[in-house]
Length: 482
Image (cartoon, rainbow, N blue to C red):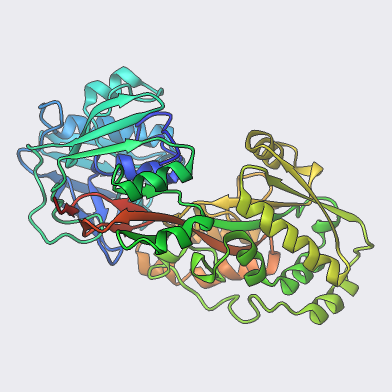
């Protein structure tokens, strides 16, 4: 893989690909199965009070960490208090909650208001994972990244050689859940003795190593390498969702503050043309009209915004543009020069907008400068292509983060929608609000979903049961022929 993690602190992880390393190491109280339903993991069982204001978690007996120490309620409380303090989902959904040890195997969570988000956030995190770690590790780290990656999962950290390799080995004392394997839930059978992650910037070298048998799996395969891989019978090419490409608008100042201009531009987009320029083949992207990623469409879905999505209606866009106050001003579109996908999509977008009479000027810059300008110098740009990783619920997505600069102007309607959503006691209650939430985005148009690009990976045919779930590879249950 190309990205070496800055650390292995699951609480602080912000890189989607790092989940492929941390998920085999750490476990959580709850998790999700293949249907994205919440299931116990480290908890043997849990109960929610009738009023939804308390949860009682009973841990499985005999659980241990990789260092041989017992996993008990003290570790759970220490881990969850730190996760609540240091992460956005912790602060947003558990900020005034308390965690208490009832006995060595029992933990009680008390919350000020009932919400379906409590179970969802404890179970279904790709980033900022509420992993349970030894209390001693938590205490030593404080608010800094943990120095020892000690979990209770099927693999333990054996060796990390900076900028070269990170080796995980099968943990022989792992105590698997006695239930069928499903998504991230159920049995996790560590059939492979050793997982060695090699950090390579050069995808050509990585693919060559896969072909010679030096490597068994390569992530971050270039789209131009697909023909080479498909011609090799010893390799299986696969895709999995990685980046949700969004065009954000400056809705506060400048020409794009006119919603009629934003809607006209959105009406004109030919997203297929943009995505084909970015990834080269229709199988390497997905178009979704609403704000949630493909893995979570079974949980969150709506028909709001579907009609007219990707209309590529040039004439309709011209008519709507004529009703706006736009007068030919240049719109500054900023992109990261490290994202080939964003740059390719930007060029096509520029041409499409010229066809309806909108002047777009592209400014590319390295990532650090891009994200600083995007968040902190809002009035210096009109449009920005920003990549979002997979999220488990709508209020974390771009276009709905009310406190994040550049997305929402804020309004009583927004505040009321968000309050109703967060106060929904059950997932079904929250799902019933998703139409209204998506309609708010459709009306305001703070962003346009351009397309979801897929990361490519490839693996040796000697591997079996290599699965992808929730946007990352799961390493347990994989078997390998000699």
